[in-house]
Image 1 (cartoon, rainbow, N blue to C red):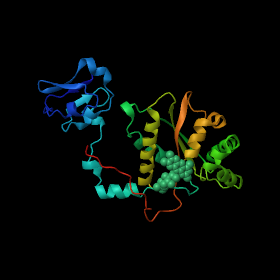
Image 2: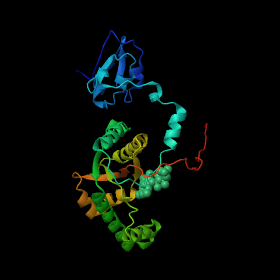
Image 3: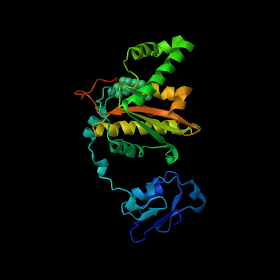
Image 4: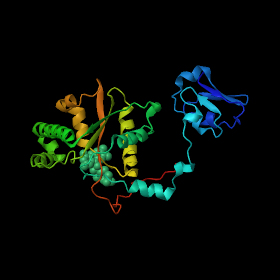
Length: 274
Ligand SMILES: Cc1cc2nc3c(=O)[nH]c(=O)nc-3n(C[C@H](O)[C@H](O)[C@H](O)COP(=O)(O)O)c2cc1C
């Protein structure tokens, strides 16, 4: 197949695929959409042309309409429910001891891959660490990193609360990995300039997917920074060559349920019309 094929018996010439193509490589030729030959190389395989077509008339080399799940109106959720759902997500820091099933985590990752990424490049890789002991061992290396920061730059270390965190760690209180049964790392090639935002968004998706499944999640910024910057932790993680950790998230069954949504600041917005 060339870039895409159009079923003439289904296409109504509505032009939605032409208008929605993000890189503008589709044009109408008579009544049918066609790829502009000299622009085909710019296609990012996003599938918008296939999935915006109401009549399943267009089949792309990367996907056919039959491979693409049908979408209920507005994703099947009304505005009020979506808002309550998103506002009621909380960072979970107390976990039950039992581990999650591998399929549960795989399902979260399966949703996270639908997060947007620049140029639809989907540049992310994931590492899932399971078990309170291995997760805690990595937290220990994060505590070592904090000690090294406190020694090199005490003022900065204290401003980040590293003195309190490491003191608690020595007392056996794990405020780094929160005794979670799983630690999820998101990583990508460190030369990829698009990957950091893709990782942040994918983890935000994953956290919301966890909330929808009754799974507790908490960003672990300390682990992320240590994993990116502290050689002993980098070595321990042994990620693929050239990869850097771009996000870390703790996962497990929540010990507590939140009964109310906490108050947050009003957004600082300036509305402009010129
Ligand atoms: C990038 C990032 C890093 C974070 N790192 C940590 C962390 O290391 N430890 C932790 O307990 N919470 C961490 N959090 C969670 C925030 O503390 C939390 O989102 C904030 O307090 C608001 O609470 P909520 O998520 O329940 O609304 C992090 C959040 C983000 C977005």
